[in-house]
Amino acid sequence: MSTIKLYRHALSGHSHRAQLLLSLLGLDAKLVDVELAAGEHKQAAFLAKNRFGQLPLLEDGDIVIADSNAILVYLAWLLSSGQHFSFAKKCDVQQGGNGKQYQPE
Ligand SMILES: N[C@@H](CCC(=O)N[C@@H](CS)C(=O)NCC(=O)O)C(=O)O
Image (cartoon, rainbow, N blue to C red):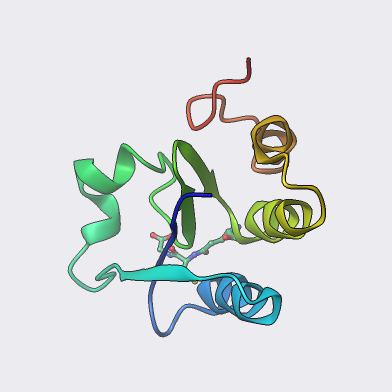
């Protein structure tokens, strides 16, 4: 499994939800702080990962999941089955069907 990255902000409650579940599940994740006050989440580099320009955002290898609810569902499934590629398709529906972030096979 690749190293999971969680893009977050220390004062973001939505980020806290994702971070808490990562912690409860005992999954190692690299926390990447995004400077909301500086507008980093609206810069092209971040928008390329999440067109909504919001935190949190989770990266697991090629899989990119936006929206804290979608992230929670993804993490719960990841732990229970390990088949995270096919499940990412379901998370894409959860986050509003933004097919750009994960292209189903
Ligand atoms: N529905 C989203 C909401 C995420 C959200 O509102 N994130 C805030 C930080 S807590 C944000 O990125 N705000 C910046 C913006 O919307 O420009 C989720 O559950 O993740």
